[in-house]
Image 1 (cartoon, each protein chain N blue to C red):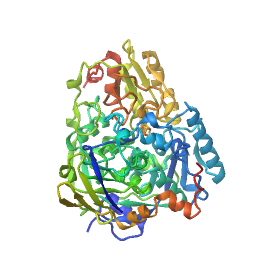
Image 2 (cartoon, rainbow over the protein chains, first blue to last red):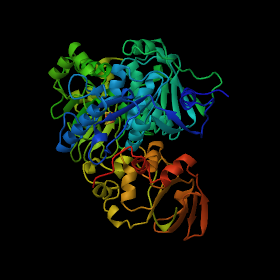
Image 3 (cartoon, chains in turn brown, cyan):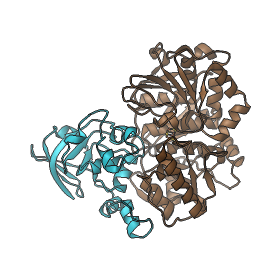
Image 4 (cartoon, rainbow over the protein chains, first blue to last red):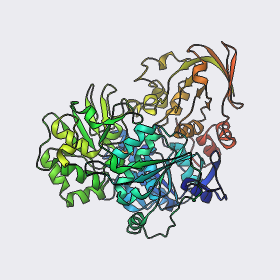
Length: 418
Length: 167
Ligand code: SF4
């Protein structure tokens, strides 16, 4: 019987001929990423041995630069860990720092066909590179760093067959909100993205969809590989790789067509990402206090340049805080070089350093009581970005930027044409 | 692992931000437990008695990888029975050896305050108050073994791979 991409990688990495839904398998792990939260005093357990330091990546991203003594203490512990085991892929505060999932893209850490783990739930972001990546628990990470293995339960796979091309003011975020709005949670299932529509989606755009798939509660979100992906990888990582294609007779729980040409800008209403999407027009006029662009899902060069093209020559509405966070130092340098940062600064945006920051309600943009925010980040749960009484609306970077200009939720087509 | 106690009931899609809010991020494990459902059910954590059983709806534990299961355990809950469990949350239940069972139909089978009897390994859930019984989905063998071992840290500690916890 044919296998989906996820099933094929699970089989290859567990040394089995086939893997089918329901199987629990032990697999070899190619890459284990640790980040600052793992080293927090109330999470960390002192590791005495690691399987292979070359398979480990360490970054500080959730609370960077350290906003509290506890965060600083976690970084001290992390640096000691890196030193003790001679870990070379270390992204300390400085030149190479970034949000872990963005670093995976910047440095080509997730080769097609590989298995990658990190204890951040949006680790499925790396699935854009045709690999198996998922967020696991902190103890799973310590276990995998020590033993070089982990376990997975294989779920059934739903395939999204993308076709067509997005119109100018419509983004991959909108495509995701369309899927999440119509099909809701995919708990226990794998999601596979493919089809002719990939051709016109940049790797960054695909990465938005892969990262957001955490909100579907999917086990794995995996993209098919194409030439554009292979090019991206070869420019960043000299290691050889073999893309994994689904078998022609792979068994899917469902195959669903998504026509990218037919989509419009959407927003997710506060408190839930799934089953909660509406056309932006239905929310138009909602007053906002803060507009946020950033996170592992929407802090790429594409996102920041799109926001800049919306606000170019205009000013952020009085009373609105417009916060933009490049997802890594690599992205930050790219958007400085392209002029996007200058445009955003002139419009009145504040540019924060690469950090999870406001996305996780940690620092640099935390919301107060009753405040209203529109965000392009990953999650809008109650209390996620600050006070539980705050409202968090979710939309594309274009919609967030347009809303920052007017002070109310606004259709970006007003500024970008259609 | 058998448990018999009164039940508390919550709905579908309970997320990890509700179980372990950011507010409690820097606190000790014991203090964190007092913040469970702080946003949606303020004061609830203080009413839980040791050994109580929690009943949930679909996709319980959706959201982040934070150690939300650890908070439920430290709150004194004996176990969780839900319509379905989020995959990442299930991992943390196993990691921290908090017994969590999937049992379709359980949400409608109980009213809050009724008494449940749960045989975790056999995946059987009885409503003692009504005399009805439901069959859940047993945890796969290797995962049950991890729960019996006391979770990942106890296992690694016994094998001398992580240092014992200080304080
Ligand atoms: S940006 Fe947000 S979703 Fe992404 S890793 Fe950071 S906290 Fe998680």
